[in-house]
Length: 70
Image (cartoon, rainbow, N blue to C red):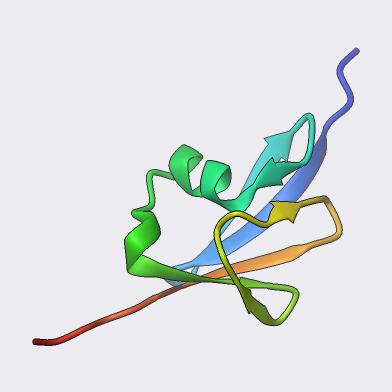
């Protein structure tokens, strides 16, 4: 039996629960969810972080879309 845990990712007003069998980088979760890494800011447990942070089952992840104008 494989060990797994659930990670909750909030983005665009939706919450997705991902089943993971090991800690993952935020960028890996964004790839799974087909989210453009350049279009979102990552918030991990209330702090802005890069997508290279590793997450575990106790972490809260929120992805906030960023807009830029020219």
